[in-house]
Image (tube, helix red, strand yellow):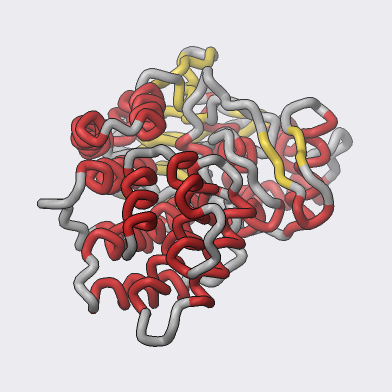
Length: 406
């Protein structure tokens, strides 16, 4: 590497993108293109950065596999910032393997962390856990230590391991302070703040009570029977019964849980669950069938008691019963939670993260835009969607594919 490239690389490491560009802006050799791409990424010009990094990767010879792999990693980080998940993760995995095989430990770790953060955004928590498990930051630069600890904290938060998340955040904060990177310090501070914001609501004496994330974790670990409207399931101790794919059964369980210790009238259940104002005998027959299905599913956790006018949910073994609901309802919760990070998402990326169709996501976005909840920038394939950050809430429990705590 010549003196100009070395000086540009030092400037980038110090966060001075303009100084780096002054040294390499007129050069088109692959190393200079790569540095220009990184500089443009630091300046927020992500599409241009991606183009430069791709040109750099194509420009390296076959014997320069390490340099090409570094360009692939840098481009993957730009794609992550753009919330563009259209590219297959195989190229990033191959680049990581190349860097590990050639002893480039720092950049191999960077590739691993990018892959883990991508999996976290897509709700693929098992994949993120597998990627982070072998990470050893001993002897690495503080910046990489901070990013690794932050990713571990986010994974722990998504799994409601609050103590582990707080310990990882503390490590991330110390490493970020040593690294002296203000944006990273701000990101860690924002994650810290999530512990003090309402994360969910609990039904208490007919009223909704806001709960912070540690309080949610404590409730789920208390052994109470929890009807969880955030993850759409029923939890008691270590037993988790997912009902996201059975909305009628979950609606019945929630209605009876909100009425506990009382019962819910059959006509009310039919009206609320089956969305009809004029129930007939067919609705009453269907209600009996669905109650039977729910009774079989929750056996061992609760019983469903028939009363003269309706049904009541009775936890077994004298357990308490609690209803947990999202901090906000009435909007597509998972979509709002994804957009709340302040990044610009494409419709395809949102659909991939939610496991839904693009058309479904587009309809939801149009409704949210009409209500003034989101805004779009760009046109056609370049259109991106943004939402103001929900500063009053932490949306961790609304994110897609969150693991049931266990």
